[in-house]
Length: 165
Length: 275
Image 1 (cartoon, rainbow over the protein chains, first blue to last red):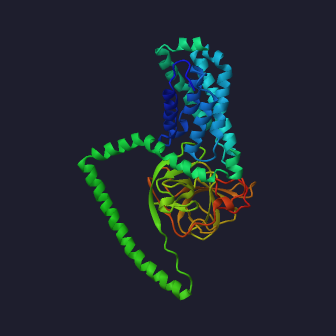
Image 2: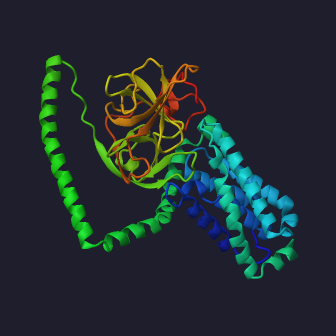
């Protein structure tokens, strides 16, 4: 896979490993339900930045790895993240022109969609459905997006994104 | 997904996965370990002395109890011989450390640092210092996954210690509470009752504390009371757990459980519907 716009595969897969570490990082019990949905953020970021080298493959492999780490059924996260990747690929040009709050809203909606798919798939094996806490991770993920987006903006990559869109 | 849940095709591979995931859990717990190490290294002398005193006192109390226990177990053995019944099996325990907790809030699984190489097999019961912790559901070579008693697919046959009433204790997905199912309003279950594993169902050895009844609510419109218990084991705090490696585990959960529940061994009667 040749990176088109200067994203080295090491950065790409390094960020996947980092996201997986963040996913399994132990947190105090009262913060754990609000753990940001790092994987959806990861997919959102890379597909938005460079849909040539990051896409379904990345989403699917990252999801499968997370499933393997978390135990339980293999595949729900791979499915959910692939759907997220699909939506971002389709709406990419539009999302790039959104303002930051709009992008945050999109992150929240996509992450919530991923959570719903995940719980639905886990429901097959008889796990109880969660209540309102279900979308806490999506909410914190949406609030994490400006940090990532600003960091990228500060390094002047936004223009390149538009160029490669 | 289908191959995994319905057909069980990935059985051997899954055990491998749990081994592969160990480094991830190890690396991600480094910051916490560092903090713990720093705390230990720079703890003040007074704190250490106080802790030492407390531990000494506890050791004394426990030693006194152990003396009584020796006498009691000898007496118990003699009485059993008198009754011509089989002696209780001595249980082998294996101390093991929890190295990771599944981050998925809908799934209560812990990863421990002992696996097949130490004799840990799926189906074995896991306890901690204060009660029943869960059971092994997958064992890799050097690590295993433990399903906690509070997972929503887990159930333990138990009985009330005070009067021997048999109940089924199910997890409900929250780490600090358990549901006691199928308690008729006429059954003698009160808040404060200790629930111990009954040993029925052949999976968990009898006599380990499972939980303490917290509330009993009778709704005249419902056929059963709503009984909520608090787990005895410190599910969210334990660092070290004991795996009961002997007697040999019951049949493979995958055989017992109805199709589709391959990863969710349920020790309850098979006729129960999932909540």
